[in-house]
Image (tube, rainbow, N blue to C red):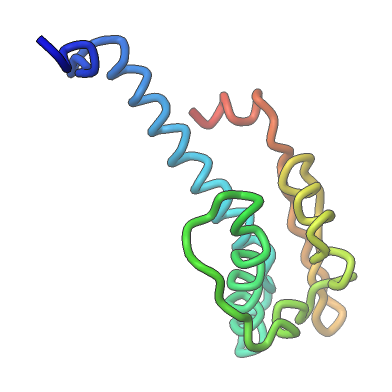
Amino acid sequence: TSGQGATLEANGPDASLRAVQVKIAALMQDLRQTFIKKHGSRFPGQHGSESRTTSQVLLSQMLRLPLSLPGSFAQVLYPSYARLHLNNAESELMLENVMRRFLRGGQISHSLNGAVVQTSFTALTLSALGSLV
C-alpha cells in the first residue's frame, strides 16, 4: 500500500533519533536564551532592570537570523539602555564580538559605583554540549 514507507514506527530507531533531535533543539534554544539574558546589567534597581530588559530585546533582534531565534523584527526603542553599566559596550555589543563570545566563550563586565561584576561565557564545543545532553 502507498504511504507505508513514509510512516515512522512509534518505538523504532527513527523515533529514538527524533527524540534526540528534539532534546538537542530544546537545549540549543535554552543556551541561546541564557546567553542573551547574561548580557544584561548585574546590578539591582531601575537602571539595572531597564538594562536587562533592553539588552534582551536588542540581542534577540540582533541575533534573530544568525541564531535562528523565533519572532519577527521589532524596532528597539531605547537601545542605549542595553549599554548601561556594560564596560566597553560599543565593542561588546558589535555583532562580530557577540557571535565570537557565543561560539568561543569569553567575558563581559558591568560596573556601577566602583563595583565590577564579571560574567563568563563558556565556549560552545562538542564537549560542552555533550555534558549538557
